[in-house]
Length: 301
Image (tube, rainbow, N blue to C red):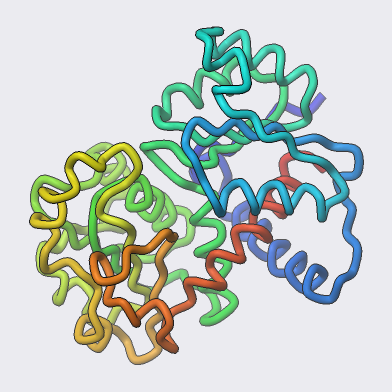
Protein backbone atom coordinates (compact mmCIF):
# COMPACT_ATOMS: atom_id res chain seq x y z
CA UNK A 1 0.00 0.00 0.00
CA UNK A 2 1.34 3.44 -0.96
CA UNK A 3 2.17 5.72 1.95
CA UNK A 4 -0.30 8.53 2.68
CA UNK A 5 0.65 11.95 1.38
CA UNK A 6 -0.46 15.03 3.29
CA UNK A 7 -0.46 18.67 2.16
CA UNK A 8 0.32 20.64 5.30
CA UNK A 9 2.84 22.99 3.65
CA UNK A 10 4.10 23.47 0.09
CA UNK A 11 7.29 21.72 1.15
CA UNK A 12 5.39 18.42 1.49
CA UNK A 13 5.49 18.14 -2.32
CA UNK A 14 8.39 18.39 -4.73
CA UNK A 15 8.74 21.14 -7.33
CA UNK A 16 7.82 18.64 -10.07
CA UNK A 17 4.71 17.50 -8.20
CA UNK A 18 3.56 21.08 -7.55
CA UNK A 19 4.10 22.04 -11.18
CA UNK A 20 2.17 18.98 -12.36
CA UNK A 21 -0.74 19.91 -10.06
CA UNK A 22 -0.80 23.44 -11.49
CA UNK A 23 -0.78 22.14 -15.07
CA UNK A 24 -3.65 19.80 -14.21
CA UNK A 25 -5.50 22.68 -12.52
CA UNK A 26 -5.48 24.66 -15.77
CA UNK A 27 -6.70 21.57 -17.62
CA UNK A 28 -9.56 21.09 -15.11
CA UNK A 29 -10.40 24.78 -15.50
CA UNK A 30 -10.81 24.34 -19.27
CA UNK A 31 -13.03 21.29 -18.73
CA UNK A 32 -15.17 23.16 -16.19
CA UNK A 33 -15.55 26.21 -18.44
CA UNK A 34 -16.54 23.93 -21.34
CA UNK A 35 -19.08 22.12 -19.08
CA UNK A 36 -17.36 18.80 -19.78
CA UNK A 37 -17.85 16.23 -17.00
CA UNK A 38 -14.72 15.11 -15.11
CA UNK A 39 -15.94 12.88 -12.30
CA UNK A 40 -12.52 11.48 -11.42
CA UNK A 41 -13.34 11.16 -7.68
CA UNK A 42 -16.76 9.51 -7.91
CA UNK A 43 -17.82 8.04 -4.58
CA UNK A 44 -15.06 9.83 -2.60
CA UNK A 45 -15.91 11.98 0.42
CA UNK A 46 -13.98 14.96 1.77
CA UNK A 47 -14.47 16.05 5.39
CA UNK A 48 -13.96 19.79 5.94
CA UNK A 49 -13.18 20.83 9.52
CA UNK A 50 -13.56 24.58 10.05
CA UNK A 51 -12.38 26.14 13.30
CA UNK A 52 -11.85 29.39 11.38
CA UNK A 53 -14.64 30.75 9.17
CA UNK A 54 -14.21 31.06 5.43
CA UNK A 55 -15.84 31.98 2.13
CA UNK A 56 -13.39 30.90 -0.58
CA UNK A 57 -12.03 27.80 1.18
CA UNK A 58 -15.44 26.31 1.91
CA UNK A 59 -17.04 27.08 -1.45
CA UNK A 60 -14.02 25.99 -3.51
CA UNK A 61 -13.58 22.64 -1.76
CA UNK A 62 -17.30 21.87 -1.61
CA UNK A 63 -17.96 22.84 -5.24
CA UNK A 64 -14.74 21.13 -6.32
CA UNK A 65 -15.70 17.77 -4.82
CA UNK A 66 -19.17 18.00 -6.41
CA UNK A 67 -17.62 18.72 -9.82
CA UNK A 68 -15.25 15.77 -9.39
CA UNK A 69 -18.21 13.48 -8.69
CA UNK A 70 -17.60 13.17 -4.95
CA UNK A 71 -19.09 14.80 -1.86
CA UNK A 72 -17.94 17.15 0.89
CA UNK A 73 -19.08 17.39 4.52
CA UNK A 74 -18.88 20.67 6.45
CA UNK A 75 -17.84 20.08 10.07
CA UNK A 76 -17.67 22.92 12.58
CA UNK A 77 -16.49 22.53 16.20
CA UNK A 78 -20.03 23.47 17.29
CA UNK A 79 -21.43 20.42 15.50
CA UNK A 80 -18.76 17.85 16.44
CA UNK A 81 -17.14 16.37 19.53
CA UNK A 82 -13.99 18.39 18.76
CA UNK A 83 -15.79 21.41 20.18
CA UNK A 84 -16.61 19.46 23.35
CA UNK A 85 -13.05 18.48 24.15
CA UNK A 86 -12.54 15.19 22.29
CA UNK A 87 -8.78 14.81 21.72
CA UNK A 88 -7.64 15.65 18.19
CA UNK A 89 -5.93 12.26 17.97
CA UNK A 90 -9.22 10.42 18.61
CA UNK A 91 -11.16 12.58 16.15
CA UNK A 92 -8.48 11.89 13.52
CA UNK A 93 -8.65 8.14 14.08
CA UNK A 94 -12.45 8.13 13.71
CA UNK A 95 -12.91 10.57 10.83
CA UNK A 96 -10.16 8.96 8.74
CA UNK A 97 -11.96 5.60 8.93
CA UNK A 98 -15.08 7.17 7.41
CA UNK A 99 -13.68 9.73 4.96
CA UNK A 100 -11.27 9.62 2.01
CA UNK A 101 -9.61 12.95 2.79
CA UNK A 102 -9.80 15.66 5.47
CA UNK A 103 -9.31 19.41 4.97
CA UNK A 104 -8.71 21.45 8.13
CA UNK A 105 -8.84 25.23 8.53
CA UNK A 106 -7.68 26.18 12.01
CA UNK A 107 -5.49 28.49 14.07
CA UNK A 108 -2.55 26.49 15.47
CA UNK A 109 -0.47 24.62 12.88
CA UNK A 110 0.49 22.10 15.55
CA UNK A 111 -3.18 20.94 15.73
CA UNK A 112 -3.08 20.15 12.03
CA UNK A 113 0.17 18.19 12.41
CA UNK A 114 -1.27 16.16 15.31
CA UNK A 115 -4.37 15.34 13.28
CA UNK A 116 -2.27 14.25 10.29
CA UNK A 117 -0.08 12.05 12.50
CA UNK A 118 -3.12 9.95 13.52
CA UNK A 119 -5.03 10.09 10.22
CA UNK A 120 -5.26 7.12 7.86
CA UNK A 121 -6.15 9.39 4.92
CA UNK A 122 -4.58 12.50 3.35
CA UNK A 123 -4.92 15.74 5.31
CA UNK A 124 -4.99 19.14 3.56
CA UNK A 125 -4.15 22.45 5.19
CA UNK A 126 -7.03 24.85 4.42
CA UNK A 127 -5.14 27.54 6.39
CA UNK A 128 -3.32 27.77 9.71
CA UNK A 129 -1.67 30.69 11.48
CA UNK A 130 1.64 29.44 10.04
CA UNK A 131 0.94 28.85 6.33
CA UNK A 132 -1.77 28.85 3.64
CA UNK A 133 -0.43 26.49 0.93
CA UNK A 134 -3.67 26.03 -1.07
CA UNK A 135 -3.70 29.77 -1.78
CA UNK A 136 -0.20 29.52 -3.24
CA UNK A 137 -1.26 26.78 -5.65
CA UNK A 138 -3.92 29.19 -6.96
CA UNK A 139 -1.49 32.13 -7.08
CA UNK A 140 1.15 30.15 -8.97
CA UNK A 141 -1.49 28.85 -11.40
CA UNK A 142 -2.73 32.39 -12.00
CA UNK A 143 0.74 33.76 -12.68
CA UNK A 144 1.54 30.92 -15.09
CA UNK A 145 -1.69 31.41 -17.03
CA UNK A 146 -0.96 35.12 -17.52
CA UNK A 147 2.83 35.37 -17.72
CA UNK A 148 4.31 31.88 -18.03
CA UNK A 149 6.88 30.27 -15.75
CA UNK A 150 7.58 32.23 -12.56
CA UNK A 151 11.05 30.68 -12.14
CA UNK A 152 13.73 33.38 -12.24
CA UNK A 153 11.20 36.20 -11.72
CA UNK A 154 11.05 38.70 -8.85
CA UNK A 155 8.08 38.75 -6.49
CA UNK A 156 7.48 41.44 -3.87
CA UNK A 157 5.42 40.82 -0.76
CA UNK A 158 4.15 44.04 0.85
CA UNK A 159 2.72 43.92 4.37
CA UNK A 160 2.68 41.58 7.35
CA UNK A 161 5.14 38.69 7.73
CA UNK A 162 2.15 36.38 8.24
CA UNK A 163 1.02 32.93 7.08
CA UNK A 164 0.69 34.13 3.48
CA UNK A 165 4.18 35.63 3.59
CA UNK A 166 5.52 32.31 4.96
CA UNK A 167 3.80 30.49 2.09
CA UNK A 168 5.44 32.84 -0.43
CA UNK A 169 8.83 32.11 1.17
CA UNK A 170 8.22 28.36 0.71
CA UNK A 171 6.98 29.00 -2.84
CA UNK A 172 10.20 30.86 -3.68
CA UNK A 173 12.06 27.66 -2.76
CA UNK A 174 9.79 25.33 -4.72
CA UNK A 175 9.12 27.49 -7.81
CA UNK A 176 12.52 29.17 -8.12
CA UNK A 177 11.71 32.88 -7.89
CA UNK A 178 13.31 35.66 -5.82
CA UNK A 179 11.19 37.17 -3.06
CA UNK A 180 11.52 40.64 -1.56
CA UNK A 181 9.56 41.13 1.65
CA UNK A 182 8.57 44.70 2.52
CA UNK A 183 7.33 44.72 6.10
CA UNK A 184 7.66 47.16 9.00
CA UNK A 185 10.02 46.27 11.84
CA UNK A 186 8.31 44.07 14.40
CA UNK A 187 6.24 42.30 11.73
CA UNK A 188 8.94 40.11 10.18
CA UNK A 189 8.20 36.57 9.02
CA UNK A 190 9.30 33.58 11.11
CA UNK A 191 13.11 33.53 11.30
CA UNK A 192 13.48 29.78 10.72
CA UNK A 193 11.22 29.76 7.66
CA UNK A 194 13.11 32.76 6.24
CA UNK A 195 16.56 31.30 6.99
CA UNK A 196 15.67 27.99 5.33
CA UNK A 197 15.05 29.85 2.05
CA UNK A 198 18.63 31.15 1.99
CA UNK A 199 19.34 33.85 -0.60
CA UNK A 200 15.99 33.31 -2.36
CA UNK A 201 14.40 35.87 0.01
CA UNK A 202 15.35 39.22 1.50
CA UNK A 203 13.67 41.79 3.73
CA UNK A 204 13.57 45.30 2.26
CA UNK A 205 12.15 47.89 4.67
CA UNK A 206 11.25 50.48 2.05
CA UNK A 207 8.25 49.24 0.03
CA UNK A 208 8.99 51.55 -2.91
CA UNK A 209 12.47 50.02 -3.27
CA UNK A 210 11.09 46.53 -2.73
CA UNK A 211 8.66 46.74 -5.68
CA UNK A 212 11.20 48.12 -8.13
CA UNK A 213 11.07 46.08 -11.37
CA UNK A 214 9.09 43.31 -9.61
CA UNK A 215 7.13 40.91 -11.84
CA UNK A 216 4.46 40.26 -9.23
CA UNK A 217 3.30 42.40 -6.28
CA UNK A 218 1.29 40.69 -3.53
CA UNK A 219 -0.35 41.92 -0.34
CA UNK A 220 -2.82 40.72 2.28
CA UNK A 221 -4.97 42.21 5.01
CA UNK A 222 -3.05 43.82 7.87
CA UNK A 223 -5.53 42.48 10.43
CA UNK A 224 -6.10 38.73 10.21
CA UNK A 225 -8.83 36.82 12.05
CA UNK A 226 -8.05 36.85 15.76
CA UNK A 227 -6.12 40.16 15.58
CA UNK A 228 -9.10 42.54 15.68
CA UNK A 229 -7.99 44.05 19.02
CA UNK A 230 -4.71 45.12 17.39
CA UNK A 231 -6.50 46.82 14.48
CA UNK A 232 -5.68 50.48 15.30
CA UNK A 233 -2.06 49.74 16.25
CA UNK A 234 -1.55 47.69 13.10
CA UNK A 235 -3.03 50.37 10.86
CA UNK A 236 -0.55 52.85 12.35
CA UNK A 237 2.41 50.45 11.98
CA UNK A 238 1.56 49.66 8.35
CA UNK A 239 1.01 53.26 7.22
CA UNK A 240 3.21 53.58 4.14
CA UNK A 241 2.80 49.91 3.22
CA UNK A 242 -0.44 50.36 1.29
CA UNK A 243 -0.10 49.19 -2.32
CA UNK A 244 -0.74 52.31 -4.39
CA UNK A 245 -0.72 53.17 -8.09
CA UNK A 246 2.61 54.97 -7.66
CA UNK A 247 4.02 51.82 -6.05
CA UNK A 248 2.80 49.63 -8.93
CA UNK A 249 4.45 52.10 -11.36
CA UNK A 250 7.82 51.17 -9.81
CA UNK A 251 7.27 47.51 -10.72
CA UNK A 252 7.94 45.92 -14.11
CA UNK A 253 5.65 47.26 -16.90
CA UNK A 254 3.89 43.87 -17.13
CA UNK A 255 3.77 43.23 -13.36
CA UNK A 256 0.65 41.61 -11.92
CA UNK A 257 -1.05 42.40 -8.61
CA UNK A 258 -2.49 39.69 -6.33
CA UNK A 259 -4.37 39.63 -3.03
CA UNK A 260 -5.74 36.44 -1.42
CA UNK A 261 -8.89 38.29 -0.21
CA UNK A 262 -10.87 39.46 1.64
CA UNK A 263 -9.43 42.89 0.84
CA UNK A 264 -10.00 46.07 2.79
CA UNK A 265 -10.00 48.72 0.09
CA UNK A 266 -8.21 51.86 1.15
CA UNK A 267 -6.19 50.09 3.85
CA UNK A 268 -3.62 47.59 2.52
CA UNK A 269 -4.43 48.49 -1.10
CA UNK A 270 -5.81 51.52 -2.96
CA UNK A 271 -9.53 51.02 -3.51
CA UNK A 272 -9.40 50.82 -7.33
CA UNK A 273 -6.26 48.69 -7.71
CA UNK A 274 -8.26 45.47 -7.27
CA UNK A 275 -10.13 46.30 -10.48
CA UNK A 276 -7.16 47.69 -12.42
CA UNK A 277 -5.91 45.97 -15.62
CA UNK A 278 -2.80 44.57 -13.87
CA UNK A 279 -4.89 43.01 -11.06
CA UNK A 280 -5.73 39.30 -11.34
CA UNK A 281 -7.38 38.91 -7.92
CA UNK A 282 -10.74 37.62 -9.19
CA UNK A 283 -9.15 34.93 -11.34
CA UNK A 284 -6.76 34.17 -8.47
CA UNK A 285 -9.84 33.56 -6.28
CA UNK A 286 -11.47 31.35 -8.92
CA UNK A 287 -8.28 29.33 -9.29
CA UNK A 288 -8.60 28.15 -5.69
CA UNK A 289 -11.35 25.90 -7.08
CA UNK A 290 -9.29 24.44 -9.91
CA UNK A 291 -5.98 24.14 -8.02
CA UNK A 292 -7.63 22.34 -5.11
CA UNK A 293 -9.42 19.95 -7.46
CA UNK A 294 -6.06 19.06 -8.97
CA UNK A 295 -4.62 18.64 -5.46
CA UNK A 296 -7.49 16.36 -4.43
CA UNK A 297 -6.93 14.23 -7.54
CA UNK A 298 -3.21 14.03 -6.78
CA UNK A 299 -3.80 12.92 -3.19
CA UNK A 300 -6.70 10.54 -3.90
CA UNK A 301 -6.68 9.25 -7.48
